[in-house]
Image (cartoon, rainbow, N blue to C red; front, top):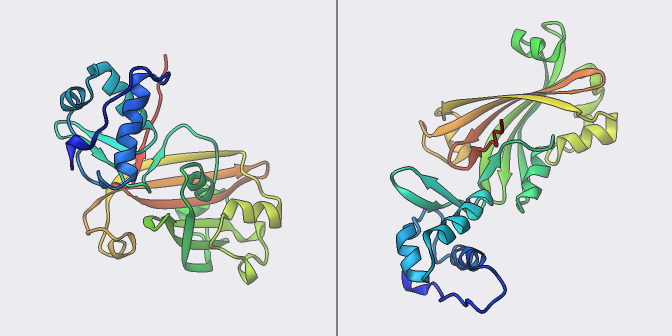
Length: 248
């Protein structure tokens, strides 16, 4: 990292100083001068380099955190995040494809398996169907840009989507496909998040070492006719984070 590469700010410009600081840091990240995983200079060092107050620097860094370019680690400093990192929190009910688009990334999928299987007890309970009833199970490796982000296994009652596996293109948005072919549109979803470690089977797929941190996310999506989707996602902990805004 070359600290002296930061430009001096122009106080005559109409843009506020925090915005100029934000742009200066963003330019170093986007140019590759401060690569993914590198630690940026400490706040007091940035203040000295740019001739601004700590409040100004903190404002800029907070904006870059919220946009997903930086992450703070308590006691270690502030680091450049991968461009493929995904922040999840209070958001609209969207597909993975739409979420990637919102972050400026191109979603991609590799189908690992697609088959009809009898619903196990937990799957049946989530979908409000009889145990053993047929469900379509689709397992996909989800990508954001060129990065493997997670493995998602989706279960849908087979009677809701007759003929689905005959010729359905499964690499794109599943929600868009369900809407176009069956008129199914989610109007509500419930998610549960748990912390886990990547096992030896998933590590090669996610391109991380076994034992790396990850999130398990269970989602049940419903429309007017009830639950239609139960998806279990294993998401890389270094590329996926949860943000929430709490208000009294």
